[in-house]
Image 1 (tube, rainbow over the protein chains, first blue to last red):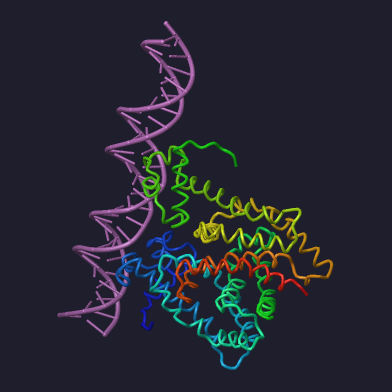
Image 2: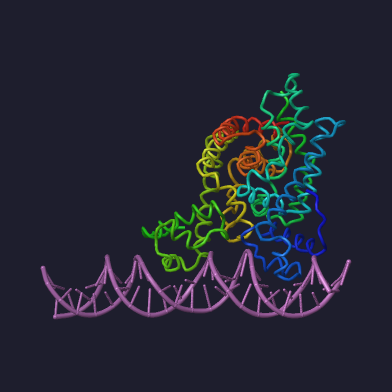
Length: 201
Length: 201
DNA sequence: TTGAATTAAACAAATGTTTAATAAAAAATT
DNA sequence: AATTTTTTATTAAACATTTGTTTAATTCAA
């Protein structure tokens, strides 16, 4: 994961990430990247061998960030399950508002690059403190006995899906971007409440 | 929406839809389509003018189907809110299992083709019987006073997002496709229960 | 002076589209 | 009914761009 990149390499990577996120792999050309980063076309291959390789590096880093940000909160030792839900919800919504193309990019490009990138996941979520706390609750009879995969899936669904489907939501409610974001801010508070209701007996 | 297509046109459309769904617009070439449908390359332009036009037709029809299937249940006059939730959940999960690429395709290609295609939505969901029933419940004080957009968004999120993120879920739980589908069958029953818990006071 | 960084130009392959010729089907004429 | 004419459908080839990548020359820095 470590590697010190030269200034030029960073310029290429930054531009490439922005374009890949917005338009996806196939719709982004090497000339787009060269133009956006203001570097000579040949330097892309000089530093990164191929468009494909460059993409893989960016995909890996992006997905790693995406997961790390989540797991950070999930594994906090001190906080309760409820507190974790609140924090996750809040941090994740802020993060995606700052980079709205991220979820669509991740889910969409993921189906083409399976195992190698998804290795990052290994146990990170399903063996997190949050899931432990949930399973404890189940064992104690506080929460309904439902596989924790549903618990994890529901949290992600309620947070991430609205962003992915934002064109639809915006159209249905005649929202502008600001109003949509306000809807998502509302959800910061609502999602933890909903999740608790869902798991409690 | 109506138009009688010749046999050749249908062959082209069928192959094109399958490829667009699987690989997206940019990654699908006209030669891919010609090969898959077993028609001469030139016929694509002869019948559909351009790859872009062909895509727009398919996108429109696909999105229209996607919404129609939903609204069908939403507008049933006789059923209760709870029954509608059960039916929606069940029908939609079956539908996506039969065509797993559909959600990713819709959400991903939607951000490039905004208004023209999204016109289909106009009032269809937010003015459906289901949303009326929800709003009645709010008025009667049975349900919490939360904007119905959250209600609609949550239903869709819990049903659709797991499919979109299936590569992640599959990896986290070491599922195969069959096990993943079984998880989704479980959710047919769970989602309506969850939604009810979320909206009740 | 040597090696790395940068550049403009070129290359081959891929891609969307068009052309011009032919085949097949439909319509019109005898 | 048979033949001709016209329209439609299909084909192989060509065309002009675009795209990812490489080359060979030049600039820059150590």
